[in-house]
Length: 159
Image (cartoon, rainbow, N blue to C red; front, side, top):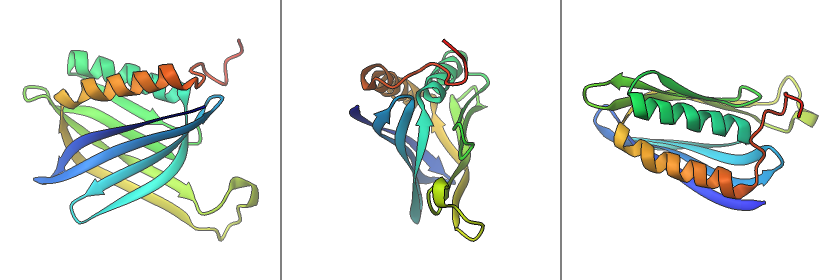
């Protein structure tokens, strides 16, 4: 199914503007074709990956809990561990959320991978945002998960 959605979390990095954007595209069963864009002062990185509906659903639950309690962390980890993004409370009194993580992509498909194929990895840390960005992020993410038809259950649990 093709129900696209974009989520941009406005951030700052040492006083300059920064963004973390998720562009959700085509869904196929439990997989979501996703582009993750990290925009920093002076440049950006954009990598494509696959995320599972299950992982996105758990991330939404964790983000919701983080927003409601202003405590803890929310972690998005892809099934192949090529994506790991962490949001955690950095300053509870000011409602500040720290973001960091990594996105990795092999230079070719897994079917034809060789030892010498390039690996592209973007690691980032030090992004901060305000808790007020979380409700629209959650609304868009939940709307996408509800309307896309992506399977939200764990692919590793029968039934």
